Image 1 (cartoon, rainbow, N blue to C red):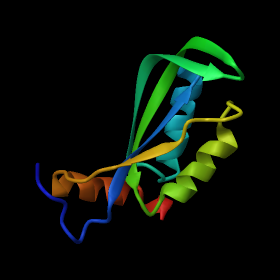
Image 2: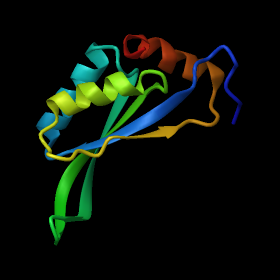
Image 3: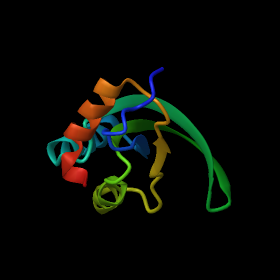
Image 4: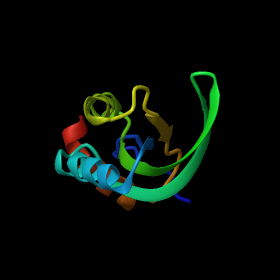
Amino acid sequence: MNDPSPAVPPCGVVLTTLPDETSAEALARQIVDAGLGACVQLQAIRSVYRWQGETCAEPEWRLAIKTTVAGYARLEAFIRARHPYALPQIVMLPISAGAPDYLQWVAEGSAGAE
């Protein structure tokens, strides 16, 4: 892997989950259209979790959103305003290294997030 160029803003991947494919794709498109993420990948998953004292197992759709670290707060607020869960997963994993030209593309595609 290549270290990101100093000129490229720090980037990361924000993860969230939604209950079905329709809501996942709708939110993914809204995020990209708003310029809050350069790319959103959707993946069907099954989650096992504890909620309100019970162990649950449900199908979900995970969104992996490529964006800038500086844009995280705006993206989080955007997701919260549109998310159907009472307590949605919204976490950012920083990208510690990557192809500089790819990270530049992520930064440019997330310009609305900053």
